[in-house]
Length: 465
Ligand SMILES: [Ca+2]
Ligand SMILES: [Ca+2]
Ligand SMILES: [Ca+2]
Image (cartoon, rainbow, N blue to C red; front, side, top):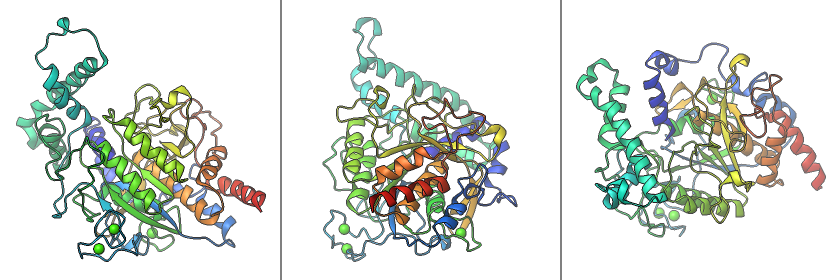
């Protein structure tokens, strides 16, 4: 998941960024992402829309969890009105017991939550070593599965070799880094660790739905609370930051652990969000490998068939995702990659931009002339974190909810437009930098601009009357 990668990045770049990351917003930088210049001109869009009525839009945040009591999200959390809390009955018969605010796929009916998770490469290695461990590569005919086994084995062993020496000298690091190293060694990279013991389901069986609980906050809601704040934090109240959208309800769906998310949880989280009324789904997570890409693709297609937009973070590895994937990717029914030219109209992948013209692309941001659609602010983003606190965070995890917020804002002011039309409006109205800095890094070549998109939507709406 992305906040793990964030720590990974921290670790690589040592500690210079720590103070910066957890610092308060500097004067003049608060809400820069909603301003003009290299922001998204959100505030200017509100001036344009001020005489227009809006209607609430439900936005699902598939993430690490949400502090639903945060002061800057008051009144912004989705309530499942058909569900009576805590009576152990699925009152609204949607398949989920007591899901008053959303669902937590990282737990069980007793209310227990899973701890850290393995990385997908560790899971794949654990699976394939049962078959291939100890086999001499010379004696086996080359096949994709065996090649994958060799690749994940090399990846996992290299990562372990890099971190293992630090086990004896952890005292030299700060607490976050110590925890990162220990989690990697003991859980994320440990083939023998069962990260599904708490749920007790079969993670390979997508019809085995009997797991999870209604605890949408869980054990580490920092990342999800920040993401939700970017979308929905109360505007103009002098607390924290301003959310992008002013008439939305956040539906938290907990599916992203410390480690890689399970494809099953992602697929079911998408379906949960669609079935319960979300029009936009934010997905600030990703991973290098996927065991069940077709199942996730089917869920994405299910969202598309209900006109629900999915917004995905491009990832923080400074890599070209047209070459090295960052899952989930968009596939067609047959599982054909987007790189073959099949592009769905309900999916947006977002890279991270900055407020610095000279370094418009955040150094960590993934890119891809085909696979990344747009850029949006993702550096020095000040917003809500649990317990009524606020922090600056950075990452494509922050850029994706910018776009989610824009899409939700437009849907709330232009309810007659389809999400696929709103997606088109966002892509066609980006601000393209004179420098051409984004030309080869995303297919729209620009940074999202709410004001221009809103103007475009006004024309679209007028054309429908
Ligand atoms: Ca229910
Ligand atoms: Ca109930
Ligand atoms: Ca606020």
